[in-house]
Length: 372
Image (cartoon, rainbow, N blue to C red; front, side, top):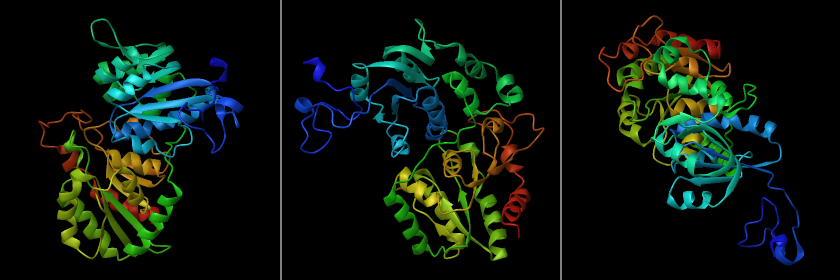
């Protein structure tokens, strides 16, 4: 009986892969071998999940005949939809873990230094385990040689904040033991989403040739000190509107709705306030309308990078060296500020790194991008 079970990506054991075809009796109609079975564990923030997609081309170069499974939190899984490198996406929950623990993988790769992700790596049946796991004392540890530099970054503030010049994609590729060739994030719209984007542009009056500047105004509530003040945003918008050359849009998630409205009411009818509560796929559609995205180090920044926008990003608490803009943007940070970066959730120094953001530099970079 076992010989009748196809080794095919399409075969589920639940229903025919093609209508009116009996896989059981007649065999596989269009066999696509499963090949090397790879599980990626990535439960960190949504921006990190987008950044990890840059490892997919390298994995496919190393394992051209493979099936890639990915488990992440429910809020991030839509970011992986319509990704031609990924075969199966699982939400992190009891049901998914139960299924994955009944499977056998050739390789499992854990990108996260978190207890839950490391415990999952330990529990999965795989010949090769890469990234981070737990030891017998419940301590997070690297499980392969390539993960040691990444691990040390978490243990050594001087290495992470002052010495390291490598991007997150670079050292994650080393962690995963793949050949990194400056591969881009992988995010793909569906045909219906492309139609929605064009229809939305018409709805808000964006025409071909318009110069659209998007402001990603917020960030995760986990690190609220990444945000510029509303007053700083208002100053930039005021100066840009004076030029009478740009169309301006506000972007954000549900946590930014009130903040964006407070900005929008100052310029009602003069700028575009995109919806914030329609999910990450629609959020990506809205952000795609911009030519330039002005943002802090946030999910919105990673999304702009994935959408191949020109990104003007300011940094304060986080590490600017770890972000790769792929030569499509500029990083603004305060050189010589002794306390930045720090990754602290509470600032003992009156948020100097945010207060001192060079707003004139942002205006100059916008002008330079559009060359007028």
